[in-house]
Length: 103
Image 1: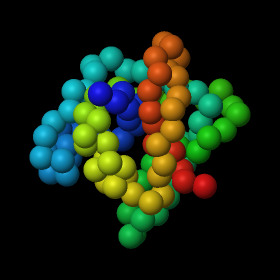
Image 2: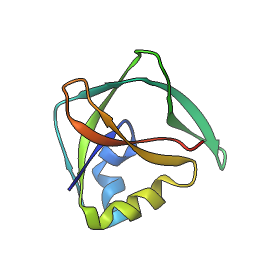
Image 3: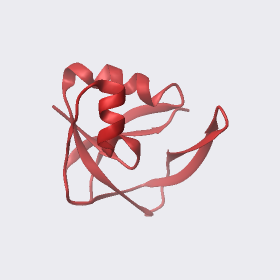
């Protein structure tokens, strides 16, 4: 199981079913990460939030989503070419993955 910090659509059960034909466990409690800036990018006329790695201490809130290892490549494809997955640590000390802007 891959713990993924999500600040967007991957916490939405409807999106999970529509895109992956299953639901993921989404933890109820909010988590926070720092060291990132939130920005937006335009893809096909729609604006999406995207994280940029940064040296600042701005806090980003989100939830931990449990992604089965056999589905993570599908999730990477869903996020698309503008995003990459990296490892980070939440403020509570948990290791997880998060999608950030592809360089």
